[in-house]
Image (cartoon, rainbow, N blue to C red):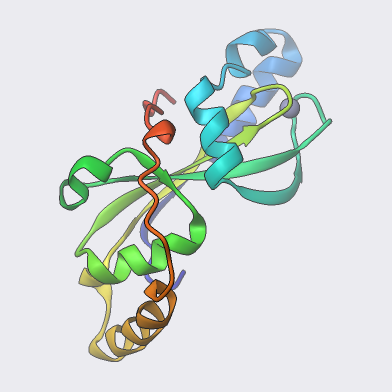
Length: 156
Ligand SMILES: [Zn+2]
């Protein structure tokens, strides 16, 4: 998404954790501890990837996008499908996205990246364009308040 800003990438931290797992300094149980909420968020809102799980190598990783911000009110902390983010980015001034990678086989999970989205960063031109896109994609979209996806607590 072009409007992503203040992107923080956690791949270095992930590599460090994986190194410690392979060295035996951290047990796999400690890193394969996705909560039932995170696992169901991965199942219902997750974005499939082509990347194999670095721990079990049985399954591909799923990315879960959690959204946070005052403007979201009771939706803060919920998981959203990636396709829903551009619409939110058009309607809200600013919100935080946390992307968590999850293996649905062994429950490995790690924060992949975080960034800000929202119309604050858009130029007038871009606003026109996203509004056109949002208008077409909100037609016929059913609202889904996924309370089951609550509960990821940004531990790492
Ligand atoms: Zn796995």
